[in-house]
Image (cartoon, rainbow, N blue to C red; front, side, top):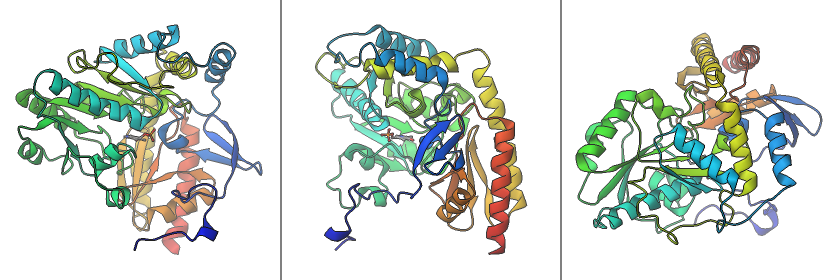
Length: 399
Ligand SMILES: *Cc1c(COP(=O)(O)O)cnc(C)c1O
């Protein structure tokens, strides 16, 4: 029998997380304040969500303004905010069309539906399988865990959704060998988040594009974590100079207000006719008002360039801090403002020690501690974080 919680020990919040005892009440930029008034340097940002920091005045105002006007119409009606946000995402990317959802995994799953529908529409319904990569994460629905195949996520939740073939990260030979007459798409996170902050080699992404074109497959990028400016480009795949056919985004698109989006080319989305997909809340006026406000800020000339400069700075500091503490850190990896330190001690012990010193980081796969500061972070704030990492690492090395 598997591990179980006794009835008398069952908390009112289903205990699927090891939640901290800290209660946060307020945020401001890169800081969060708990109910005792203690200030924390927030280098996890709700897990890569607060790209513009907490309580950004312009975003707050956009939400307040919309809250006084209209919250929901259902997708039976269009709204100017929804049209505008979709048009902007189309203008900014490879995509011709967008569907809004409420979360990352919903946007991801919409992408899987787009892919399957495409092949059934062009008369090849036997092609439905998607090649995924070891260590990638796509969310927690039954289909998303079937794609990731991580034991911790799938154990006890079977039977698994059919149609996902996993190959080793970065291995083009394995990808090509996994392609069969049933393969529909190749799917990847251009920079892996939960799985440990690994950036795909730009050449590998280009090779995936070439392979998809060669076999008539669709290329699907999950930029839920690495998108929206985090790597120093609006989308991480821009570093490779290739585009996907389908992409899902979420997290920083709403800066904390729930919104996700599935982006696709006209070709890929050709089967998504009325009635084939839907959502009650997806793309509601509150979410699209916030999404538009986020894009207003992120598309200001120089904004992403500044995020890139801070990403370069953070990366340099991570290289240096890892070198200073070889007993605690093996090295660093990531891209831009998406950085991880590979730990010698258990990563969660490092996260805990950092938290005691009022720096919020987050564990990730491969025993990594990850840092996802807002794009508005300053050099001085990065220096403050690194000083805390130095202090904690010195303590851990002596322990
Ligand atoms: C967070 C994340 C998801 C899932 O997003 P949710 O909003 O939690 O459903 C999917 N893919 C990636 C790469 C993510 O980082």
